[in-house]
Image (cartoon, rainbow, N blue to C red):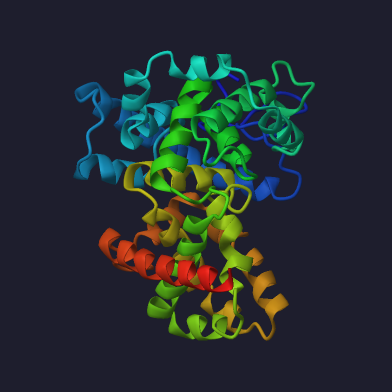
Length: 345
């Protein structure tokens, strides 16, 4: 896996449809290659600037300069370091030395093992690195990370979606323990209750998005109000998979750069940009199936493939979006959800 960096496309015979992360690209390969030919120039320029910044200040600080750099994209060779530092995962790993290995050494819950094992072959079936016959296959690494996390966070254990997140982390970090601590930063701190049995955090954020849409794209908000429970249908996968298999991989990684640095409000910026940019198409929907189909289509095509322009848009199109306003909406929506669920029981 060493050397599989996005600065260049694989050129070996037989791999012309494999991207730098091991994914097969059977349909949109030509447009992907065209985008990458242009994007490589940006990547190389960013890479030089990041190297200079990290030489001058090896410790990753949270300041205006680093934030601007992160928003413009973290080169793949620096991603692990930036993600680990910005999310607090590095600090956690250093203060819990030996903890990850101790989780793998304990006696494992047979049900947890079985549930994770069932999902192994479903994780990135179109990625050559995760095929069971690959040499070496990343399935064993993935299994270890998920098993350790299931024992570490017993209130969550394991649920579908976590395998894709762990898989992406492994592809980038190439390190089991770092992937584990990054997962803990995401699932335990940034997105609490997304993956708990009642998924109340996920349900809350879907409703928060609905409220934000009403404020920023009222016509779409009005349309969506006609269909109770619509946000669960159209965006639950966006949030629970953190846009994996929803947006192109280069775009997902750029979103994750900002997610690790700025927190979960980035997920709303992405969703709002997709919705606001495609208002005319969404407003043409005349039925529930139309709406669902439209929400699938708006994540594809040139707009999301051009990750550099797309990332510039997410910080301009939705306008101001403060953490305080999101937290206020979360309290309101969570209270409503809990009242509704207690009313049903």
